[in-house]
Every structure is written in structure tokens, then in C-alpha cells.
Length: 127
Image 1 (cartoon, rainbow, N blue to C red):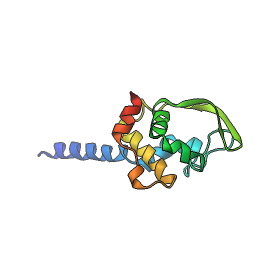
Image 2 (cartoon, rainbow, N blue to C red; image 1 turned 180 degrees about the vertical axis):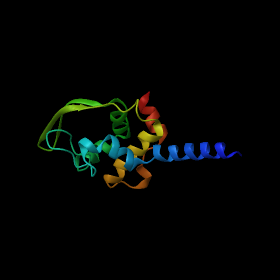
Image 3 (spheres, helix red, strand yellow; image 1 turned 60 degrees about the vertical axis):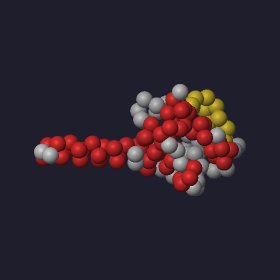
């Protein structure tokens, strides 16, 4: 293998590793509104952790669908109402990247590894 081919393989492998880095992708795409710890921003973005996610997390398709298609309008979390628009990330994140973000969020919510997201679950949400 030539040196150039070796560098191309290394670059591709490191790009794939970055694509699957849930914490980095969450920091890049989500933390600006939802904060690094997913606690949310008063008046802007609801928390992505807490008791309300016990119910939301039970529907596996919910988080995947919101990541892919976004969400707009009023939502109420506890006593606070949020009115805004979360952008769709379906065009920016491939299935592996979206699964990595969703899995990172599930870890922030305290979920066990057996409840993490797969590429297939994100792909199903796209359909």
C-alpha cells in the first residue's frame, strides 16, 4: 500500500470515528440550546433530562423522529411552557451520527447501554 493510500485510509477512519462521537456531536448541534448537561435554557429550550423523559423515552421513535424532523410549537415541561422551533437534523446527520447523539442523550438521562439507539432505529424514523 502506498503512503498516499495509507493516509486516505487513516483519514476515512478518523472521519468515521468523529461521526460516531455522540458527546462531540451533541456539543456541536444541541448544547447551544439545551446546554452540555441537557438541562435546557429557560424560555428557549426544554431540558432533555428529568422525569418527563421517562414517559418520552418509553416511545423509542419519539427522540429519533425529533432529531430527524425537528419540532416546533408549544410544549410544556413541568410548569414551564416553551414555544420555539428545534431544527431538523436529518439532512446534517447520517444514521450513525444521529444514533450517536441519541445514545449520548440517553446516557445523560441515566439509561443503561441496552437502551441506546441503533442506526436502524434512526433509519426507521426517516421513513
